[in-house]
Image 1 (spheres, rainbow, N blue to C red):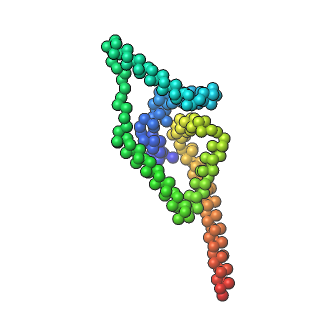
Image 2: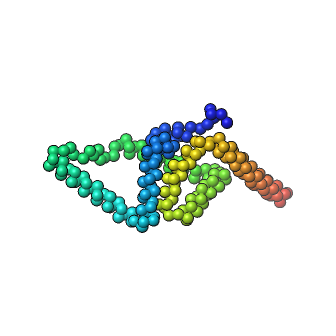
Image 3: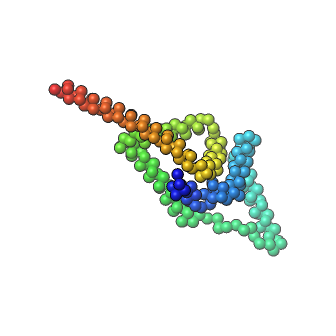
Length: 205
């Protein structure tokens, strides 16, 4: 496969900060995410630290630091803590609402195709995906699952970007096998419907 046919993973991920972190182009951000997530997972899962206590202690420490910083700044004529405007803009709320609307419409479209259009392949895909999520969720708790997702997000995209040609070849073989099996199932279903129709006509005669 030529380079012109390769998919730009960086472009698919939005070409922003998230894409740079996931593909390790911003290695400082990726390393910080990996270290922080590993530390939090170790604190909560191995050290037995309570999540609510941890959050409360962090905010308590932050409030005390800001309070004494402001007091010392007023006494020593130093600048106040460099805090940004702590508010959410209407533009941010609108973007989040648009993203939620897009995902909800996609979910409703899938439900319509399964319930109304009777799309067998889509139904099998949804059932398989939900079963996989249920099976994985039974093996790990929620925090461990999030940590695994972070590790996968920091490894799979960069590996696919490096070995894209080999992965695509394997995926084409798997897709062809699935399509062949689906066509066989669809053909058997069609033949059974035709046989039932012929049998009903014979009974009517």
